[in-house]
Every structure is written in structure tokens, then in C-alpha cells.
Image (cartoon, rainbow, N blue to C red; front, top):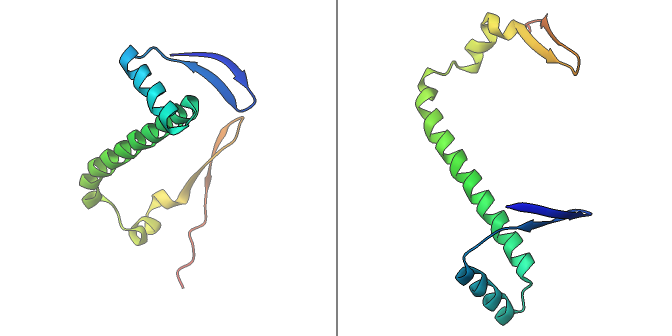
Length: 104
């Protein structure tokens, strides 16, 4: 895969594909009056979204096993872990102690 040039918001992507696939794409787009670049861009976009969704589902499946070990938020707020907040800036990371919310 090679990126050839850039326009404002667009770039050229060169990809080697099987000749039969390229011909099918040209014929499909010609018959339907669709621009091949537009069709290919949308197809790639949809495929990327599908792959990301599959990864999210796999993460959810994997993490669901750990859910039984999760600490309820009310118990978490009572713990010392809640007292420590990390503030990240471009220059450094600082650790500060936060005040626990008053339980009223």
C-alpha cells in the first residue's frame, strides 16, 4: 500500500489487487454510475468500522470474565485508591491527594 499525493482532505492510495477484482470493481461501478474511488473509499471505511467493532466485542468478551472481581463504586470511593489522582501535563506528572467527598 502506498500513499502517492495529498490534496486538502484527500490522498491517493495505491494498492495492488488481483486483476479480476479490479475488473469486477470497474464493471460494477460503470454499470451503476458510481465513481470507483468513492466506492472503494466507502468499502474500506465500512470494513475498518467492522473490524473495530469485532475488536470491541472481543474486548468485551475478554473483560466480562474480570467483571466478577470488580469493586462496587461505593466501596471504591471509600478506599485509599480514591484519594490519589494523577494529573498529567505536557511537562510532568504530579500526584496530589484529593479530598474524599463528604458522606451526608
